[in-house]
Image (cartoon, rainbow, N blue to C red; front, side):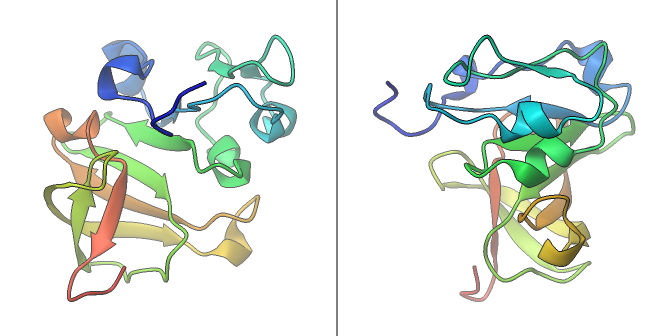
Length: 159
């Protein structure tokens, strides 16, 4: 059991650079082995594998298409997408607060909720367009920030 409720950057299984450089792929950050398998059950490519309903899911990147459905159906908001195929790294994050607007400046946050930097919102996907029940926000960050950023905060006191 993980008493922190989140994984540290060193505990996260990031794929090899060649994989993230090829297009969007999911990063799974499940901190606990609990009965949960929507990511595995809803993956159209069968790329998410689990040894049992309480096992931690793992991505088979050879089969993953980068569709993001796993992120959208994850009830624990424990999956995000990374795409390092261009100069700026794009992160697509599950977001359960009122959605920002495209072009809005936001503060990027690490796993503990501490500020990492600022960026602008590139894309949003509202709840009604999600494959699950989770809206998403896409931002661009530096290569270094990509391993740290896990959420955003709207500026001017808005979440």
